[in-house]
Image (cartoon, rainbow, N blue to C red):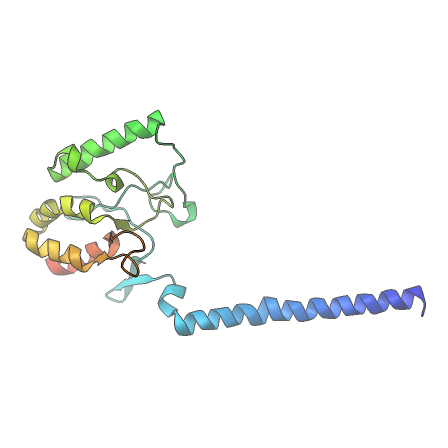
Length: 199
């Protein structure tokens, strides 16, 4: 066997291996993962989308900015230009002693207290700080609670009705102890719009 023949044989083996692995890992494996996702986890695999009247209005995984007195407000978004921009996920990277962050937190705390008619001491941390991703759609039950009276007044509802809505949209810790309770603001505001007859 000449050196050229041995080289061609090795080259042929390498090319066959490349072809088999390309088909296996570049075609069959992705299709299998896609099929498993569509069969077993269709909602999650497609982005956990929220629909209203046949239209996609958001995702259970990405927050939205809500302003005005009639809506529950989300926690601040850390995305730089457009709030809750899924293409710009990330935190502010400002440390807890950074003067810019300290000033921003004080301003936000005063504004949240003013908007909701509560003392600054009642404003929870998630009302004034962004999540690590900058996209989290959840707020703490404490932040939802200080907004109930404002939202009820603005929508012509009783505080009890709005509190019941918050309770319905509160996610509890997985297995009863993993994580913290959270209220999905996107879903809550959609349910609020339905209850108040605006959607």
